[in-house]
Length: 133
Image (cartoon, rainbow, N blue to C red; front, side, top):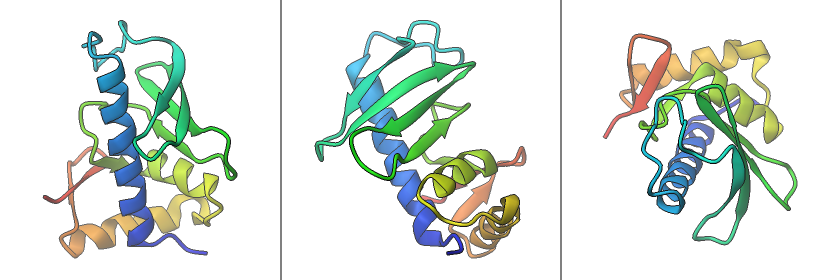
């Protein structure tokens, strides 16, 4: 199955919810660039009851949905302060975790470009895109 705009919006919703809950659960942690004051691993529970495990890596955080199949992956490898941001890496990791084809990333590139053309996303000029408000 090829990725769709619905998949991108599903990713953005999940990422936004996870980052919001992480920040709520660790309100005293303020370093969103290097995450020096965030725990190295843990769990967050979303309002819908889903539990996601997280682990820090470099300047990012990788979330994996726990207790359900498939094990959905949301890897926020930079810009934790921008919950509506997407890039090829993040979207590819998510799509592959839910069993969607990425065509080696070519399908992801095409989809993101199409969504910009249609006005659903805006390009940030560095390989990242943000949901248009």
